[in-house]
Length: 277
Length: 310
Image 1 (tube, rainbow over the protein chains, first blue to last red):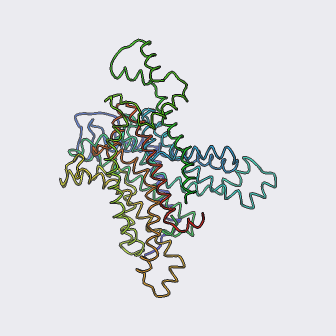
Image 2 (image 1 turned 180 degrees about the vertical axis):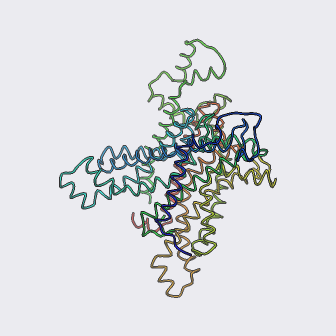
Image 3 (image 1 turned 180 degrees about the horizontal axis):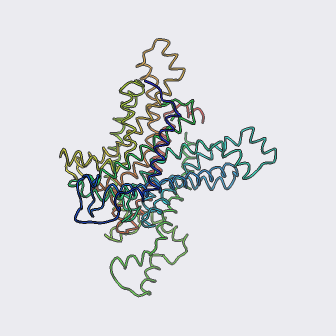
């Protein structure tokens, strides 16, 4: 079997993933029908030539709603991933650099936030804040930042011990400049790979909150919420479940492959499957 | 060892205080306070005086930290208030539903181990062969499938198309099958990959090579040297996935109408029954922390390498 190079793989999956993001950005202009236009006379139509993926209980075109849903699901996840990774990295690096009380407080906060099992705290928080995709993002941010903070802190501590950092410090470089020029560039690839590998998981969790009615509010098209709507009609109209479900599945798969390609790209010595757990 | 246990227990205290404080604060800042809530739910109009009296009785007029301390004292005694809806003690409700969730979690964990241990090891020992590739693709697909969609797919295939099981089978053993499969699908996918990579890492080490050169069969090397390392890693994996398992039960229990704490919490969200949500967050977190600690201690107990370091 011919070996496909890591670079080619990365290019291919990057193109796919960026394609998904672009579709989400320009969803408004790509939809064949108005995703929110109700027409009860064509409710729950089987997939056909006009409505490729059928229609839902209000006669809304499924394909249009799935494309529109990409906007909510993917862009919200993108925002969530950026927020969590940037926030976590900054907190972690500052903790490593400052040490002392800041470090202790920050890491104990991280301990508390990860002590909540997975979605449990997010469910409670989202229920208190009420629905809305931004509240769901906030809830997931609170349970996800410690991972990045701990990782960035560990990486930064290693870097701070390096000779070139010591030299820079002897040279009088301190504070933000030291971190920006010598620490961040050296931990960037690790943080980026982690963030990309998390993209799929966070997409699923966000859609999960919406599925429970804690994310996007109707009539906003969102994949998790659409699945939840279709659930009661699974026996008679399975396409209302299959469409959005496959959309989530495909998006998650593409972003997972992108993350893995990025990981392999940044670590050429790392052969597949030989990572230490 | 004893010293280690003591240190771990001491470290546990701030975390426990933190999670209880956060849970308490979270639900105290909700828009309406408990008294308004109670009368609103009951549909009774009462004067401000009655409400003030009721607040004083509940201790809601006291400073925040005092309220927290009182609440914590009650929590230890198993009194976390009553449900706005049913009027029953929420801790008792939680305890009555917990066995169902534990049953589901244990059954999902068992299936996961039964599937992923043989498949992961097989995959590693037959690296790059057809079987390995199929298993890897399968585990990738399983890993990209959100549990709520997996659940609905299972319902669609097993209950609607094949009609092997009723869609909502209740809390009997029939009702256990589909939620267990849903939960173990994603977990097995992750486990298979991890177990495969652990085996491959160990196989690449020089002690395996030297055993191999001395003519010891692959099988013997595996059972005598590798298996317990794999099992050690499985303990860590189990502890790590416990969080997502406990969180995941909420969605899966809701879909399959499994009468556990997850469904209880989701139902409570829809009815804004905050005491129920509170008992759910606090106690699941405490259980989670304790299980993690247990896993750490177990790991400590069985891994001779860590013992030496201490």
